[in-house]
Amino acid sequence: MVRKIRDLYPHNILLIDMKTCDAGKHEAKQAFAAGADITTAMGFSSNQTIIDMLEVAKKENKQVLVDLLGIDSDKRMNELQDLGVNLVGLHVGKDEQKETSFSTELFSLVKGLEFKVAVAGGINLTMVPEIKKYQPDIIIVGSAITKAENPDKTAKLFKSILQ
Image 1 (spheres, rainbow, N blue to C red):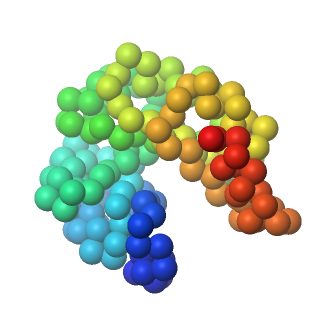
Image 2 (cartoon, one colour):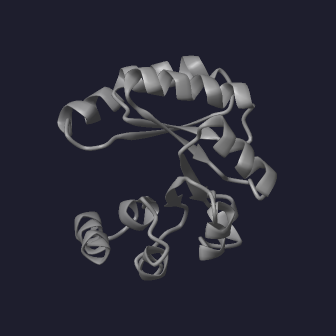
Image 3 (cartoon, rainbow, N blue to C red):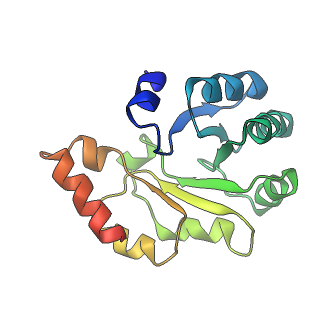
C-alpha cells in the first residue's frame, strides 16, 4: 500500500506512522524501502532503537519523527535532543482522545529545545488557529478529514486556514 501511495504522489512527503519501539534499524529500513520520507519511533523506545533509526535515516536522506505520546519528562526530552533527534511529535492518542483533546499545553514539552515539531491527535478545524500560533512544522490531521461528510472539502478548509 505504501508503494502505491508513493507511486500516486511521488512529490509529496510521505510519513509512515510505524510507532517503532524495538528493532529500529530493521523497521526504518522497511519504511524507507517502501517509499516513506519520514517514519516514527516512540519516545519511550530505548536510546539504541532511536540511534539505529536515526543512522538509517541519515544514510537514506530521510527523517525520523519521535512520537512523544506518554512522554512528560524534561529529562527524556533532553536525552532525545542529546541523541540527535530533531523532529518530535506532540501527540494525543486515540484512546486518550476519549477523555481529552489536543491541548497547546503540550508545547511546553519542547520549550527551549531545538526540535522541529509535529502535532497530531484529534485536531479539528476549530483548534487550528490556536495551534498555528505555536508555529509547529507539521500538523497531522486524520479523523477530522477521513470521517467528514465531505473529506475533500474539509481538507481544503484545513489547507486554507493553514496558509
